[in-house]
Image (cartoon, rainbow, N blue to C red):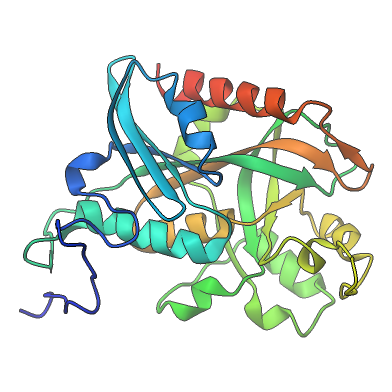
Length: 284
C-alpha cells in the first residue's frame, strides 16, 4: 500500500514500541506534559492520584496516570530541538499510525501538548519566578527547514525578518505560534510573550567562556525585535505540532533575567510552584 512504511522509516523495538520513547499506544494520555529534565518527571507525577505506567529509555522518561479522574502523561525530552524532533514524531506515530501494520490511520488524533520548563528573559521588565506563556516563537536552530510544506508568517515574523541584522543566521530562521484555543488554560499567567529557541546554551545565548559569541549585544537585539524570553525547545514543538495537527502551548517559569543579571533565589521552589500552577489549570 502507498501509506505502508518501511521498517527503516518507522523503527520499533522488539515489543512493538516506538524506538526511542519505548512506548506503546496505550501508554499515553491525550494530554501530555513535556519537560526537559528526566528528574522533573517524578516531581510532576507525585501529584497524580495513581501512576499506571513508568517507562524510560535514554533521556526519555514517561509516567502516565490519572489526576482528578483524567488520564494524563508527563514525559522528559532532554535538551534541544533535536530531541523534540524525536519526541514529536514518535508521539504522533503512537496515535496516528498503526504500528503493527505500519500504515497511516484514517482518523486523525490531535494531542494536547503542554511544554513546561524554565527560561531566561531578555526583557528587563520581566520579573523572575513568574510564569511566561509563549505566543510567538522564532527558531534559530533550523530544524523545520528539513520538512516539506512548512510555511508560517505573521506580524511578529515579518517584523523580525525585516530588522534582524545577522545575515549569516537568517537562512536558519523559522517561526510558529501557540495553539490559541489552549490559551484559556493559562489566561492568568503574569506574562505572555515571544520566545527565541536557541540551538545551544553558550554562544547562542550570548555566554562567552573561552570562545567568543557572535555579538555581545545579541540578546539586546532580540529584545528590540520583540523577543521576551529564550529557551531551547519551543520552536520545534510549535512548528511540528502545526505540521502534524496537534495543539501545543508552552509555559516557562522565568528563573533568570539576563538584562538585569538576576537569577532565581530558590530554583527548586520556582520549579515546584510551576508544576502545581500548571496541574491546577490543565486538569480541573
